[in-house]
Amino acid sequence: MQKANKLYVVGIGYRPLGRRSQELVRSADIILASQRLAEVFQRYDEYEAAKDRIRVINKVPDTIGFIREWFSQSAIRNPQSEIASLVLLASGDPLFFGIGRRMIEEFGSERVEILPDLSSVQEAFARINVPWDDAFFMSLHGGPDIAKRRKLPYEVSDIPWLLERHGKMGILTDRENNPGVVARVLQSAIRTHSTGSGQAAPSEIIMHVCERLGYSEEKIISGSIDEMAGRTFADPNVVIIMKERVQGPGGRGQETSMTFGLREDEIDHERGLITKDEVRAVTLHKLRLPQSGVFWDIGAGSGSVSLEAACLCPGLTIFAVEKDVKRVDMIRENAARFRAMNVRIISGSAPDTLAELPPPDRVFIGGSGGNLGDIVNRVNRTMSSGIIVINAVTLDTLNDALSAMENNGFSIEVSEISVSRSKNVAGKRHMAALNPVFIIKGEKG
Image (cartoon, rainbow, N blue to C red; front, side, top):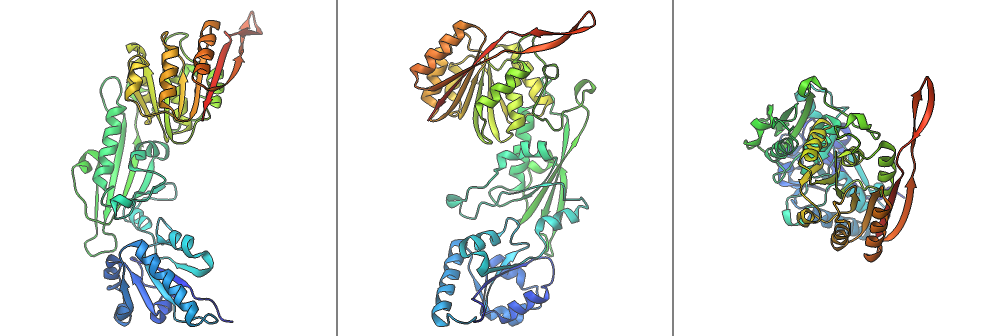
């Protein structure tokens, strides 16, 4: 028995076809391509011999439907042998944010063979002479139909924190999420997280837009995000963004890669008014933070819990709510210094300020200003499911927290954290106890 029929996905755009791809194109019964790729294929030596077998289909669902019908008819015509092959032309490397993944998911790896060209991202980095093995890659190509755009792992709004974490990015764009939009999102993030002096965060972002790679009108445009934000660009294009670190205010270096375990002395705060390191660690453990979603930090103080959460889950949107103006400024300074791009600072008292916030997946209450019951009521009305954690130093606050959570139907667990730290007294090491803290966890849904 000969091999079963296969779909051959052949990448084009940057190099001449390899020997195997040439053979498949020459022998194919049908060659499927979008209008753009059919035009690209016209530059190839194989085009003249193959042009009568090219069938243009622009929409992926229609392409899948055609291939499924082709497989079905092939089995009916000759189920025991391999007939002429079906070739699908793809852009660059079909397995790099391309159609190759979808074809394998639809038809199975045993019925699909991928023959890649170079990827557009490889070409883009080569054009600007920058290594790409340490870059983070993402695709913003959600499909041509805006009403039916597929859900992407990352969205354009994630770019600021991804750039902070990785420092170098390669981005595949589309008409909706174009380079100008990318630049404006970065502009907005810098304005939001500017330092207390009103100056932009001290980092420089260089943006390269590589237009129509592989075409005769190929063009590379480089500049700052301010220069790019007001421009328009030809499709298709690849965006490369890179961040250069510079010295922070007063010569203080910018934090480049936060890790779990920020110390109290690294965070600007009023004396004694900060969630202690050990308590903060347990609090975050109890919260079981998701990688994405919404987190309310109510009574944020210096923002220590928000900063640590931002480090752990940069895809989480964090709202640090604080009524004291001086502490709000501290949160802003801390968030800017640590480049916590996903922290949104809300100045005002809870529960009033909570009405305009998106529903939370997690809530931490470190301070309530005497409004604990009302705050928990608001959380319960807004949160469909999730976790709320309240830290209490006094028995009164513990009782209030338990009553509020019970009245709102949360399942509850309570931990008491007692911490002692070593200190030197008369040349000897002693243990000094900190105030114990009750950690009350409520879970809903």
